[in-house]
Length: 182
Image (spheres, rainbow, N blue to C red):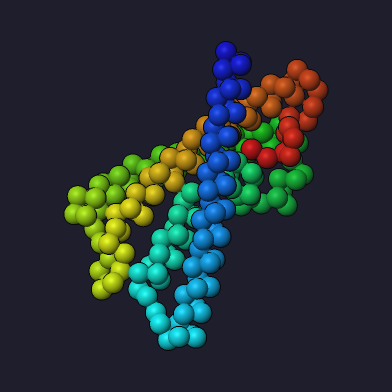
């Protein structure tokens, strides 16, 4: 059973790491697109509604896909001023409660966004602007997907926390594992 949990934890973390690498490429693509749009607008007086909307779509993808990667790496916001002074047991409790709250919020966002996305798909929603992106439904689909990735990473984080805690109890470490993040 322990091997299965470790394997599941590893698979979740590998998937989240892959998503993080995709997010890196989305970031680079967005930077290139913004630079190109600015150059075209100011040097050649040429603007494109489609390209501007694509910037927003890429930013949304970056945020929605990057949330799970940030959670995995421990780059999420927390009050480290207090956290740093906590005992390993208190840190464990804070981390578990935080991850459980993140899981609940993610599941709530998934539930609330499904009808919103389904409606967008059913009407084949497009941009209301002339020359805009014709597939607005696609970016809206990233809402439940992004939160599903956060929920999945939350499960992986819980597995890692309990695994580290078990290792700490049996091995005498501080319970935080390498890097000290979830």
